[in-house]
View 1 (cartoon, rainbow, N blue to C red):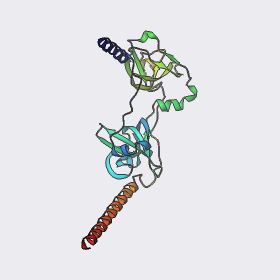
View 2 (view 1 turned 120 degrees about the vertical axis):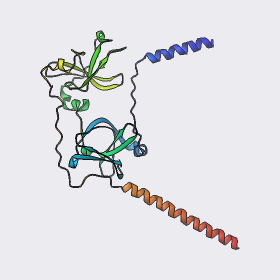
View 3 (view 1 turned 90 degrees about the horizontal axis):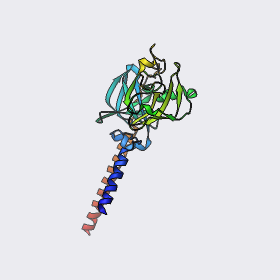
View 4 (view 1 turned 90 degrees about the vertical axis):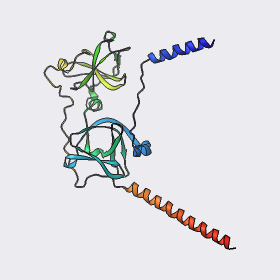
Length: 265
């Protein structure tokens, strides 16, 4: 009987392993400030371009520490996972490099890189809520996945096990039909060309760029004073620590006096 139970358990485990993984994991930065205030941080998960005053963006140890940990020249692209809004209304983004070095910068000095979210916001009226799936003939075939219709960069994948499903469609200026895939083997919010899934950019747009997603650096009128952590929270923590030390010291002195009185009696 036990052998049969073990056999059935093994079969069930094997079947579950064959099922496509739909869940996705949000990696959190290994940063002490984030770990302490994670409940107050908002997930972003987008790429931004540095665009700060004097041609650079300064990275700080945290939104409450003015210690510099790095600098970026304008134009540098960085993935920002989470943001935090301080008591002054300044929104800070956290950047993690190779899971070993983190830094925080004012999001006022960062411009979002055009992506699927930007496309959805710009072409919301042209996107139709239509569901469907890629034809089964594309199983084991190469299909191109794009950040958005008309993007110059994409990646080629071989369709395995099951075809991508889409829940929104869009027709571009060239007459190509596109489907928005919410999730497919770890890739979220991507697009496939429904009428030419295996075509690369040159095949889809032989005359050059589609014109979608072409943006220029945002021109900003920066104030004279650069945004930087004010350190108020650090001061508050320091005052609290000093108060604890003071109260502890007073308590020790009073206990010693009390003991002396008892010993003198």
